[in-house]
Image (cartoon, rainbow, N blue to C red; front, side, top):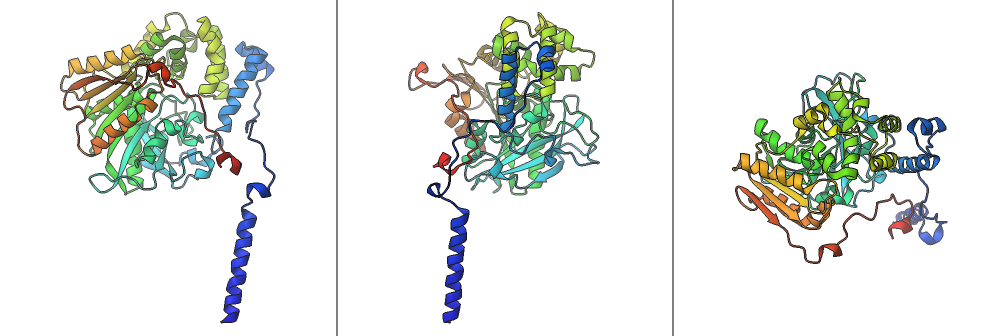
Length: 484
């Protein structure tokens, strides 16, 4: 008896010592200062500077932006992360098929909220012309999910805003999942299982035969396919997920969410409860024309998809010689939004990026005709959110899309909420509004009722008193004092 107690006590002491040695409190270790360098050291070569018409200072700025982006990769490049490698013999799998499951994506590599878990899936989707393409998505799990009427976990399909044009711009491999508390973290913490496709061409950018999968930027029908098929694949992977789901999207994703409402007319999916389209990109070319600088950045990613959809189009027909040279470097770097801003801003300001009147050209107009939303029949409730101070998506264009839909299809159920003085970052100002709306969908409540309704929201303080744009970013913590 005594010997047993002695052995137990000794083991307890050893356990405590081991625990102490594995956790060294701040006063027992040498702390490093907050990181002020990037986990990447790429530089622009002299030949690249010359070919792209960049000064040495501009080249340094582009490199800083690129290294910032790469430092935010959670698992390295998608080209070296095995998860994004498409299994062989899957090219003929039907749309919605689960191709790969990573049950635990390892939250320690990400900056997701405490109390959430992360999975990643690969699934089969369809592009604009209906061809089968593989795509990736993440699933963000709350600790205690809400349940739907079938007793299973409520699902929200999240359609992200523009994150870039190329494979490494996929939210599923970024530490913050690209949109952090802006929406996906918030919805998960509210008890929803968030299923978030990267969009085909982001993340998975080659198929099982080695063919390039282009990102069809701004193609609302394509992104709507990704949303529905991602949910289908997630439901097949996890039987605890409800068949009931709501689609939520912002900016490019807002157009995708609207596209989901239109798709539901032609290809109804049981369990779909409605969609939230925040600052929706309804017509990408018209938005680029209306918004100048901000629209120009959005239109850049439409260049490669236009050439993919219309093989007879050319880079020289869309971009100036200077713009084409910069875009060549952009493709070499495979940069995302931060790189785009540094690489193209001076040309946009000088009016020397796009060819004159490119918006009126055949290819731009035809692509918009194939991909736009608005003025078409929808199924299910649609909540549209728009800020009047949005410089990326014209409020007038959103209003025109709502009006066209309601005039042509007066039976549509559209709630159009206008937020005075709110910028493109509308998900913050509208947070409790859209969360309440989602909850109502799962509870069978019909918002403002049947038909179309336009409501101008009232702000508690003067519009200029509110923070208009995001003034912070998230950084991966490497020392305990950074989260004390």
